[in-house]
Image 1: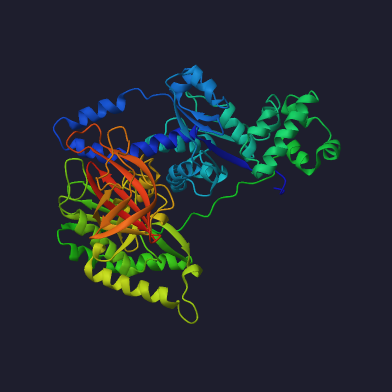
Image 2 (image 1 turned 120 degrees about the horizontal axis):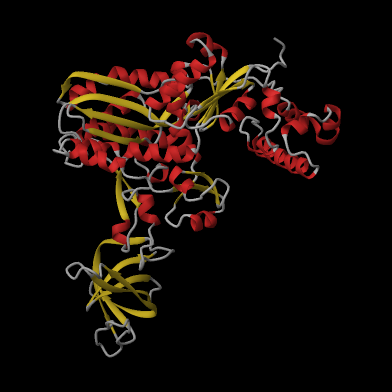
Length: 569
């Protein structure tokens, strides 16, 4: 077989994969709560009823265009390529979700691994589309159609019902067979050997623009779009019409890129399937039978596994900077957490994190399924984020004081526990004192790219916090507000009424028995908290004042009580 002869290829297409990835990720997040429901009488019945409820219409959008939509949205008239507002006009109840390439890849990775278990040599074209040589699976399973139906059945058992399979000479023709030749009733379509040109001839030239098999990147995609538009203006509407053009004329007008597309239109797809190299298995797990009840026993049993985990990363020149630890209990409960490290994890640090998670979670379980309430049956460790080992190699003359500080604090933390060494961080809040947060050494929130939940410091800082003090912030914040008295020239106490009006011009304030004349002042700025709760509501006013010594103070008037919250150094 010559190098230019198309090779029989098998392409699996997962329609609307961004929506499927979204649903699978949401289903995985709800699995823990469903397990908790199952433990209560009648719980699984209610969970099944919720699962069987009709799914709301969903559309994934990117740059204000619909890139994928669910079946219920399509039934309402939503289509791929529509503008956001047009889709909402067709379906007012449409749920719009921003496209997330990382989510699509994350959900598709286990699917590719599942396919590789049945037919190795898979090329990942993009999330939702993959290709492989048809010859090997066909010889093993007794034919191309049989191999394709086996893969469809395997994926259906994994919860993927809408998979389409196309078989043809070359990946491009196979992709078009999967997209245009299949249906829900018959998800497999095979183009006979040598029949690629005839199958492609009636297809519109726009499939060259939509195909993911071209593998050209953004610049090549733009060239394909321009070529398709030019062909349409020249009156060439189908691939057959394009294939009838002479190759020399195509080269003169469109260049080598046009010659490549011309060969695809004629069914001469010379680009072979390029199987991926499966990523190394980096995660490790330990199963305990019988379950272990003592944290030290679990930590001791993890020592060899931790060494193997670090060595496996080192074999591919990687180090782990974020570690995911999963604990499974004897009753099916689960504890999962991502641990950070200021440098990189070694075997001892991995064992410490397992021990700390056991100390915090064992016995902390509740009806919602959080924590462990029984013995540990399984521990799984996996790298959540990795970095090149060369970035963490020790310097020739040592790492300087930072490395020594890190080594010392890590040793103290290993002896005292996770919260034995704390470092300051900035959180969210209206008052300066509550924005000062102590976090365990190594849990740097700025490095936590997943700190989007309500408990993350980054998420807390991102909240609006009406009434909070804008930048620049004071340098010195008092742990306990310092009582002061603010008085007018006549000696009367200054206060603020309900409308925010100051009773008199502040002339001086008394702090720790010292009278400080006020040279300049600004305010008041109201801070209103929990106005809906009479027992916990608070209404105060902030002032910025400068005394005769040139020192700037941040004062707070809460009713008739004055305090100093901070100073500007």
